[in-house]
Length: 535
Ligand SMILES: Cc1cc2nc3c(=O)[nH]c(=O)nc-3n(C[C@H](O)[C@H](O)[C@H](O)COP(=O)(O)OP(=O)(O)OC[C@H]3O[C@@H](n4cnc5c(N)ncnc54)[C@H](O)[C@@H]3O)c2cc1C
Image 1: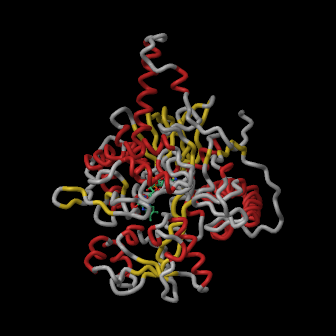
Image 2: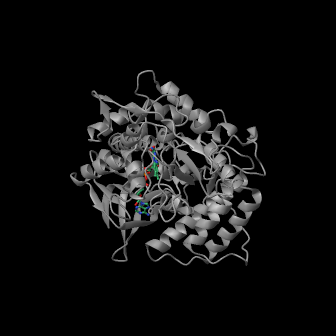
Image 3: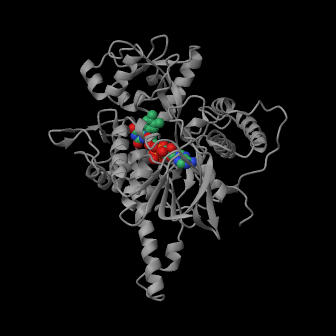
């Protein structure tokens, strides 16, 4: 079995950035189930939030993040996020990411719910693509080993310690085990769980499912963000129209030509995503339409074409000149706030197992994510993963050299886990039903969209949870990438439905018609764990 100091699962911003830092400290293998650039990162448009502009401060970024998170952001984690942002932007520049500048200064845009312009971007709205291309080029010219089309299928754990990972070569159909000291899950979110989604087809919740099966704690899974404005053109794949378009003055109108956002909330189009998404759903219902429109025709054409070249080009290719015509949009699944529960250094409750990027729950987003905080979270906490592994490695060396030397961190500190213990539940057993529709990916995606989507109720969630439990029991052992992904999505869907059922209130992105209020007794997290009979 090949051995590495670090194995990274995934090659988005989290996996690549951590790999580039880790290679300074030991051998590194990246396993990725598609090509290196198959990921969500390359689709990111708006950019990365960082308080580096004049008149901005980490304190202001902190306040904006906390305000959007529905009372569930972890203040300590958010402080880390905003305070360490500037350093990580400098690191990315050092790695060659070509952020946009004017007269030698980084240019910043504003996005919804940010109180000042704070979004660092590259190539206008092509930020993610520039990051992915730059980091993967750096990885290719380093000693990091990369295995493409290689799907991690099981985390190998012995005596509560990670030993390595089992992986499927998707092209040869063979499996192999790789051992390591530190295993880092950087597998992204689970956006493919829903019928309408902005996410890449590799984003199927694999890291969360594998971690859960290995005994890791999973938290905040009921909080999933739906992006309000995704292109809805017949026959065209959903394409995200970034928040920054509304930040620059784009307005939303319904099919009857009425600007509706001021009817719902004072911030109008600049309100947090969940409010805009729900308002759009209500307008679509009211007007019996499957879309509303985003209007930028009143903005200078040059502003539109230079700030949003990718969106402009994409729409043009599909016969729509957005400087002259309305953009048809509707909400779609976008971002998971929850995930594998980690402490402020990316550690899970299993020794040697780390998670970073969208697959991790660092608790910075709470019940709702502030736009452009997720690329930032990937790099800030990604860097901390590597720093933590270095501490662990150094402490081990010192411990073996001088067992009682008080120079190394005390054992209790090494073992410290800032896991949230409140609200820890085992994943419940659930009755199966005989009336479940046939099991396949489109049916799973429709079920999640209809019953566990933007607007939920106890009835819709119970129905979904029962069907998911039934399907889960019928699932055969996975043999290839599609069947592995279906298994993983199914498990993540179940965890999400169960968590949403438990949370009998509405908060942030989680909205229930039977419990529309936010309740003080629910200002706590739901942490779920499969019952392996371990504790
Ligand atoms: C359209 C769009 C626009 C966005 N815009 C922004 C933005 O402007 N600003 C912002 O901050 N955020 C934005 N986001 C969110 C942000 O892009 C993601 O949260 C972030 O890129 C996640 O990075 P990641 O490295 O965690 O995961 P990803 O970039 O999704 O990468 C996951 C990787 O894991 C691999 N993988 C998954 N499962 C396995 C497995 N079993 N075995 C091996 N490999 C596996 C995948 O192949 C992939 O390489 C946007 C997201 C989308 C979809």
